[in-house]
Length: 208
Image (cartoon, rainbow, N blue to C red; front, side, top):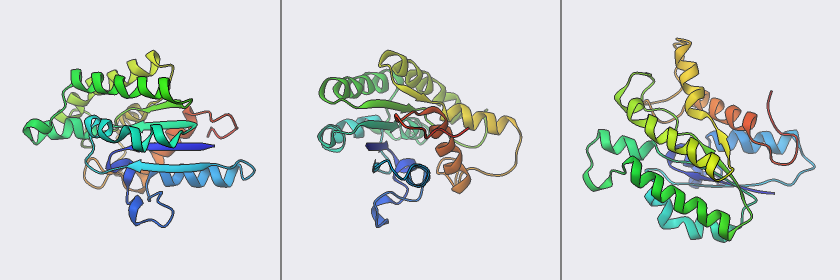
């Protein structure tokens, strides 16, 4: 069973320096959970995260990094850099909601038409560990697009953004990121648990 993860640095998380090319982030936690809880199932976990990627960067490498690998499941986590670069005012590198939805729709259509993969869409996580932060307000439109696309393409939705908001609303002072965006071990654990609670791979892998 080939499970492919694709996204930005939050998915990447040092995969190229890792002997197994999995990295040390949420993909690693999911990989290790699948391997140890269901050893009779042969899971092949592939990480294709690249730091700094926006949805337009995924488009540029979609054929090689997704379609040609013929995954059984493709899990996508994208959107943080599309918003973050607006905050940094990085000109042409900004991707606004209309373009985000248009390109994302194209990618998912290609998966549906050219593979048999089941689609898993992860909500963009957070920008700053503050619900009222400008980044999180801008991110809302992108989260809503992912939710809409999940319904349109009959994909599994992983509510990672909501999971982080719920944590922040609890006023727990324990940090989930190293810089407001990139996960520490606790943030990666929250992402992985949220994924496992919502994804059904055809075998019993969900976390209660």
